[in-house]
Length: 89
Image 1 (cartoon, rainbow, N blue to C red):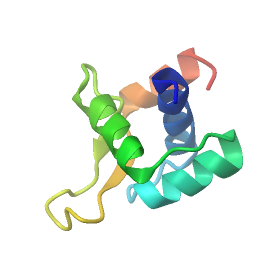
Image 2: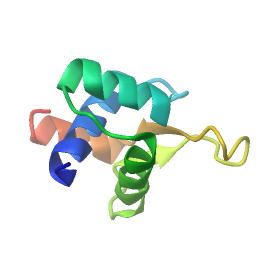
Image 3: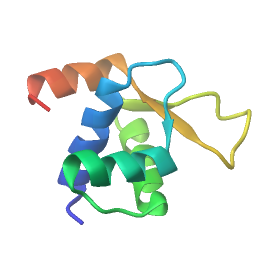
């Protein structure tokens, strides 16, 4: 899987879901397959989300990670929204 395509697909989906609750990896697996025709495993998606959160500036952030580390949830940041706008995602 091409990391750039996966990252752009994740950012695009998170950009259309601008709620404070975010999406978990299982929901992103489903939406990537349905909307972007990208097939990826939850572990791969989590890895890419961790990368996007760790970069400077962070494009995504984990929502309330202290609540349940088994069901990690992610949302897009303001920088991520700017990125999707600039790159027409």
